[in-house]
Image 1 (cartoon, rainbow, N blue to C red):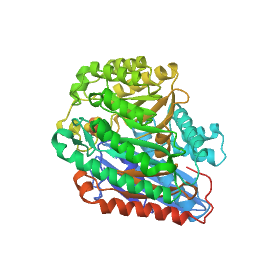
Image 2 (cartoon, helix red, strand yellow):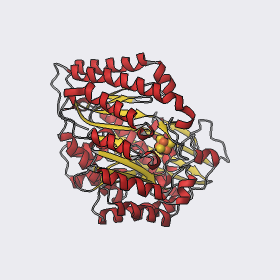
Image 3 (cartoon, protein in one colour):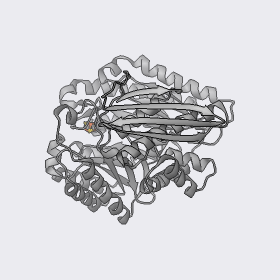
Image 4 (cartoon, rainbow, N blue to C red):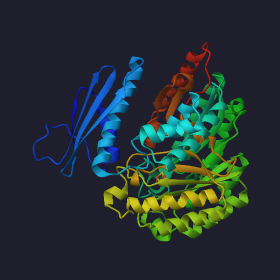
Amino acid sequence: MKLEFHGHDERYTVEQSLLNLFPGELPVYEPIQPGDHSWAVVSCREEGGRLLVSTDLCYDGETTTFFHTAALSGTDYDQEGQRRHAVGTCFFQAYHALTGNTPPWGMLTGVRPDKLVTQALNEGKTPDEARALLEKDYYVSPGRAALALETGTAAFEAAKGLGPRDIAVYIGVPFCPTRCAYCSFVSQSVEKSFSLVDPYVDALAAEIEAGGRMAREAGLRVRAMYMGGGTPTTLTAPQLDRVLTVFETAFGSALDGCGEITVEAGRPDTITEEKLAVLKDHGVHRISVNPQTMEEAVLRAIGRRHSPGDIQNAMELAARTGFPHINMDLIAGLPEDTAEGFRRSLNRCLDFGTDNVTVHTLALKKGSRILLEGLNIPSPQAVGEMLNYAEPALRQAGYEPYYLYRQKYMSGSFENIGWTRPGGACLYNIYIMSELCSILSFGAGGSTKMADPARRLIRRRFNPKYPKEYVERPEKTLANQADFSAFYRELNGKEPGPCIP
Ligand code: SF4
């Protein structure tokens, strides 16, 4: 879509709205010519303390013009936000006037729509006011606004339990048995990169050892640890034992307040009795088994080598081992799936009786086999049907939503939601999604976040992306840890405020 702006430079806002509202359209900055079928002119000016915005929009040859006005007040920073919101609103309203559509999340384009709720609650607004804000100012559907209110409130409550030197730890294992069709992650298939696994575990152990020492010296307290990937359970039982032992020893007293250790046992074909026994011996509180579907044909279509029967066996093994919490992941919108197939998958998950179920919506990621090979995926309407079934079914079974996030290019512009029975919420998921505390990440592709929520400040450091590069460049991860430690030295002497997401 050709874009032209007058009197403002809200390029990012309009581009994000464009990607959200017109999937497949990309921004183009070339002069609009007579006969063009897809363009928008967005203008903005100030007059008497008000913003006057207009959008001329043409799509598929249909055109409309929309006007929007908004008050301008407060500091320069406030006014910047008001301008951004006014331009986004006008573009959205023009889209709505032209197409008659209102997407479930309205004009919201970000990853964490419930952040607005948490912020509103922090500012002293009531839950009703927070929900009304989403519906009235951002055109979010009442159903989605109610969901965001629940998950935004969970983040608001979780923040109250965090102190200024509380952090979370992430340990990444970027290996999987095979590559799933929807994946764009840099995970390496173990068959192709078997020789890298041992050196990777050596490098990971060394990085954790240094990081644990740094955390103790900085007086930090780990509240939750999450081991993800990839698929951590592609490691052998002795390798898992080694990583967890190093973690416990290196962090030592910094783990005194750690009530949550999670390991993704994502692919059922990597789960063995021996590995689960290692996790149990190390006091792992939660494992996540991620079949994504219980349908044989869909498992084949996404490149899984296991059957629904293997999932059943893995779940029985996990239940016998006796973890306090087990999560299962499902994805709505997978290749070859149908609304009926998704229903069957969810019902089978509910039969397992795990206390956590996460329902993702398929995101079409660049580099995934779905896009590269043009696999057949359900329509956005069918995905909507799947999700419309999931919510009441989960609620009826006693689950409630506790975190949600969105990704780019999601089927039907929906969301991913973590559901839990009371008392089973994974705090790590809330911390990371709502950016409530720093995350110290280990492993290839690890993204470390240094957060001072009181000042709404986040700094990021990235580990080398690929396992080989990670193994060969320990100096980069050590430099990241030095920055992490310096961040907390900087905070020394300042009186940190409460955690404000
Ligand atoms: S298990 Fe996860 S990380 Fe591994 S290939 Fe599948 S989607 Fe990618």
